[in-house]
Image (cartoon, rainbow, N blue to C red; front, side):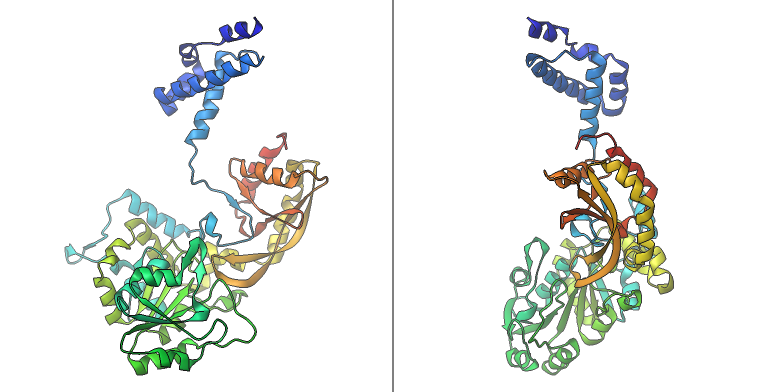
Length: 464
């Protein structure tokens, strides 16, 4: 009888729709969506009443519908606080764009732009023209082009220069990167025949020279950016390979993977070959735009003018081209490299990589107490030294001294996993990493301290 009484007390959909809360929701989400949300909440309320719960009122049901609508309206691609200690985290979007790149992309989204129109001549132009001169200036290449990522750049080069022909590569450089991208598979899709030379740990110049024949389309050097082979090893450097390729009149292609336009050792990082250095030896160089370069996702091809012209004539180029939004952001990012003295001020990737540990430690001390209050007495929070990594396959063995907050549970029972889940449910999810019985929040990439403290305060009073 109590169950039936509770069910009878439930308001109708129309009654809930007439509440002030529902009227406000209709203006935001539309009548159909609000009606569906109320019906869903009423169905849940009926089930709860059958289990012995009291009937909620019309306002309460409208509030529940509001929560449902807000959850459904939340973007899937959400911003997060990257406190993982990986600066270029592939799963979190890699490089953050500079303000000038964001502004340029915004204009391209809002306005008509001269994407393929030569304003001075009043005739059709080429979209590559917006970045070609910049790329040549910054890399020393005769010509350059851009596609949507570095995998596409490698695919396009192979398909253009080695379709139905052989591509020679060292066994020690047959890489696999995230997402099961394997160099042999890319070669096969490009229509090239893979010719492996040397062994996993040792490859010599004579191996390449002996493999060259009438069917050779190119020699490919691949920068092993996401692993290192150490010990009894040998490899043929780009300069020596260039001499072999030159004698055989075969193009040498150097895939840098990540690729950097500046000497990273200036910022205290391990030295990586720069694109300019690679271009000086190879006929073509491919590299990424959204890793160490710090721009939007893109794949660059720089090198000999005649080879770039052949690549641009390949019908696949159109399928792999970048749109106006990315092109605007690319141009703005590349322009920053004309002023290397202010790169760390303007380019987020280099700014985060160049941060000094003592500055990060000072931030950790400032936010220690608020974070400890927010996570609650079940946990101990301490300032802790840690090591950041670059990520996205760049300098895989290199780490950068950093500082974070190490959060440890006072008792067992999966409390750290539960806290990690609570952090991910915040209005701006906080992503750290659990290691050695501690949830560590590496602060290297924490730019907005005040916003972080406001978000972390949402933990207060929530159930573990």
